[in-house]
Amino acid sequence: MIIAIDGPAGSGKSTIARELSRRLGFEKLDTGAMYRAVAFTALDRGIDLDDEAAVCALASAITIRFTPGESGGSITVDDRDVSREIRTPLVDANVSKVSAYPGVRTAMLEPQRAVAQNHDVVAEGRDIGTVVFPDAEVKVFLTADPRVRAQRRVLQRHGGDVADARALESEVAETLASIERRDALDASRDVAPLVAAPDAVQIDSTAFTIDEVTDQIADLVAQKR
Ligand code: C5P
Image 1 (cartoon, helix red, strand yellow):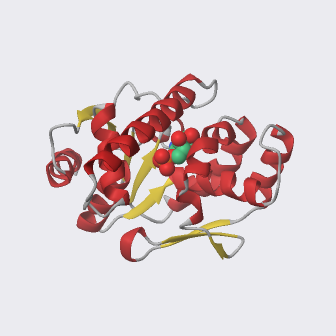
Image 2 (cartoon, protein in one colour; image 1 turned 60 degrees about the vertical axis):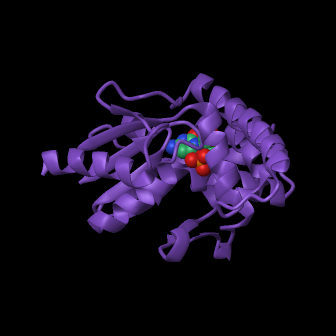
């Protein structure tokens, strides 16, 4: 079985995919981490991100692997662990440029589909229900109020404990600007844009906890079994 979870930045996809895969015993596939890995590696190797051919060649040449484990597991590029490096503001600011290149998307597609060959999967991203797994048995499009998404991101970064409320407020404003910019780029690109599949169940998580949203999706899964 494939569960596809798509949605904008910070809507809770990763946390919910992790919880759901743990409960159901499914593999988890974080496709955003793969696009982040391409962006990070291009920046790290000094490749000009405007050079589409060079970025696409890089995406085809590298090997990206996931190793499951505590707090989301790890991701490697050609055996180098880049789990932390892909989560920086620099990668946040550049990943949408890289992920809009059709050649990059083609290079990611086959390894993404390969994960589902021998496993039940919870896959999360922007185009899972529309392009990667259009026949997924369960499709969810997860949204939340943009300000709430920014607040959750900041609290996650600080381990949920923020001492200085004013520092938090400016960080929330910065994060909000960053995720809105990324959503606009992801939604407006020509290939595999951020859009709900026509048959996706839309869940607005603004007023729900992680457990409540996970319960809702688990109910959808139970109906399909
Ligand atoms: O999910 P996350 O926020 O880590 O995704 C990072 C970026 O990767 C997105 O902003 C988007 O540009 C790209 N992405 C994509 N298609 C996916 C998943 C992520 O284009 N399926």
